[in-house]
Length: 318
Picture (cartoon, rainbow, N blue to C red):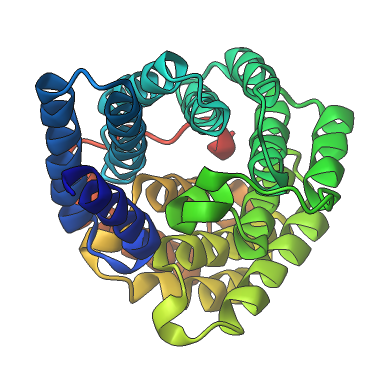
């Protein structure tokens, strides 16, 4: 009964991830990981240990994701490695693929996009992956190639992400879903960031607008605030590349209303990129750019992730 309840609790946390306060997600994921490890200490029954390892790996993966959102990159990397290890022990392909995909994502955040590509390719080789898992990995691969400035490879990965349609599913990305899923709005948001890395304003604007349209079609209580905020900031950045200052401010308004605890590391990085762009000589005499820049600084300083130690912005600002 403990294992059944643990499975249900992990699934519920994954499903409610984007609608639950990040601090609450962190605390709950920590509790679930402790319970799973406690079960491992109490049983030697192979089937039960497999279930406990799976729950521990899923809990560690969720804890890694929320640690990143809260600005703790070191913890996120450690927890993704833990999730990968638990997946390896029970030879669970989808869990290993998710964990290695997270490590790929965290690698380019750490300024190592070549390492990111290696993690992605390792993740793609695990068995039992459905379309959602592969879509997520291609999206991460595209971002890594964007950081490397490899336009051709990035565009191939974007196309591959959009073309996964075999109907295959797996028990993690599709069966549990939630934070383990990767719906079309999240694909579009991430592709917008890839186009920004490639300095493609039109591609970035189209992808960000698609993400916002897809998100807007969902009931309000089902819209992931972290994803919608990042898409709004990416839209602002695309317009900034074209020097459309009015459009930048309009795109940022939804982000400015987001509570401090929901301003994750991904959002802060994007905001820092806008702040950096506003310092371009083209805007040196603009009072509007100066006011908007100061507003961004105040927004970022007040965020929970900033107070918990989120680092400086990385390659996207370059």
